[in-house]
Image 1 (tube, rainbow, N blue to C red):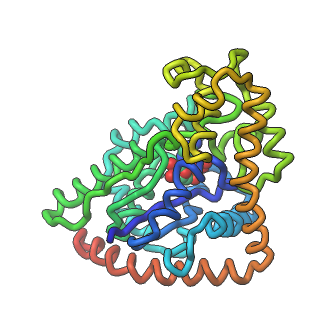
Image 2 (image 1 turned 90 degrees about the vertical axis):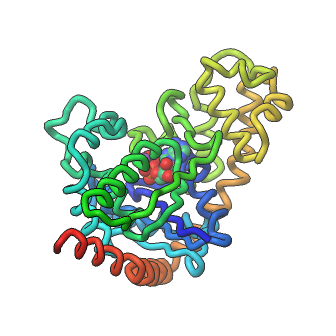
Length: 329
Ligand code: ADP
Ligand code: NA
């Protein structure tokens, strides 16, 4: 039995990339493990969020996680700002991590772009807070998408430096659980960018709340090239949009890419997109419907989050208190 931690930013609505790269694994990993899943609202405010929208999205995404199979009785489901241990340990890690380490984070470089003068300092130290999220539970297994692998390496560097500097084996080593072909789902508008809540275009992603018509329209407009689907996977090289749509199909059908191409190779995208739409609608719209049913009773979601925060704090508080003691606080 392992202790698992993972999180999602309530900066928008959870999408198909979050689902395939992370959330479906979170649901599967509950069995036989102690699982802690967090709506990371402190991470969200590293870029501007409308306060009321942020509060609402935290609740909507909580409902979506439950609709995806996260059982809030077995798992701990809560929002980050409700457990103060995260911010306290993050401050210690701000003082352990080196400036140069953070400067090498590719997500920061991507998000900050050229305008370094005007990004929040929170965006820069975001990976320290992420390390604290995990390590304040002494969690060892972290199921995430591939975009987070550099941050997890940094978390291990921070844990190791803390242990080394204070001469105590206090923080464990984290094992990333980055799962195969679905670890990076790409934007529907640009096959070289990952599908993300922070993409300005809603056409770039399938939200888990999208209805059948919206899904059909987004897939119809998804960028492709003029060639039909190839018969074998090597021939997807250099065709990122085709690779992405086939990968999404394979993941949702629980099939291998080779099998999808055996069945659909030679088809034009007109036909393949119709099949893909049917599959996405069948898998995703029941999640949206169940989340809407849950969200109709906001009191229940609120109680689940409060109960989750209390159970999370019971684990995190003694660990962060001990970290503070080790540091001399
Ligand atoms: P976003 O970029 O949409 O805001 P988050 O930072 O909230 O995503 O990530 C939540 C989880 O979903 C993380 O484990 C992350 O690695 C995973 N994830 C995010 N985008 C993708 C994607 N396009 N493909 C696969 N996994 C993803
Ligand atoms: Na992300």
